[in-house]
Length: 109
Image (cartoon, rainbow, N blue to C red; front, side):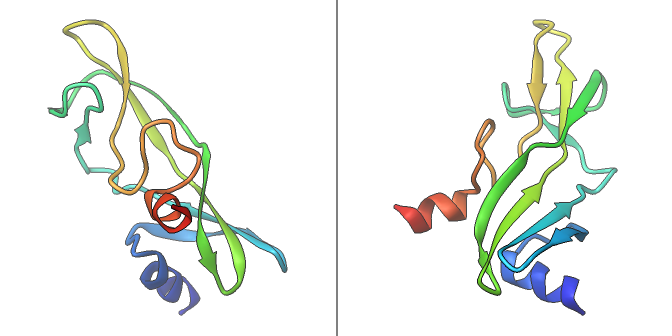
C-alpha cells in the first residue's frame, strides 16, 4: 500500500521498493521496464543493439511525507554503431547528467 502511495505522489509508475528510510530522508529505487526500448540521448532514436553498461546515480526529488527523497535510477548506456560513442538512455523526468529531477528544478525556480 505504501509503495502505491509513493508511486502516486511521485507520478513514477516503475517504483519497485524503498532502499532505506530514516526520519529525514528516503531512498527509493525506480526500476525501468526491462523490455522498454532504449531511446538514445544523442540522436533520439530507438536502439536495439549495442548495450554497453549501466550506472545507478542518485537524483533528489520533491519532499514526500516531509522527508527528502533520493531516487536511485538505473541508467542504461549503449554504444552507438555509427560513431562508436557511448550514450545514456533518456528518462523523461530526469535530464541526462542531472542530480535532481525536473520537478525539483521547477519547484525551486
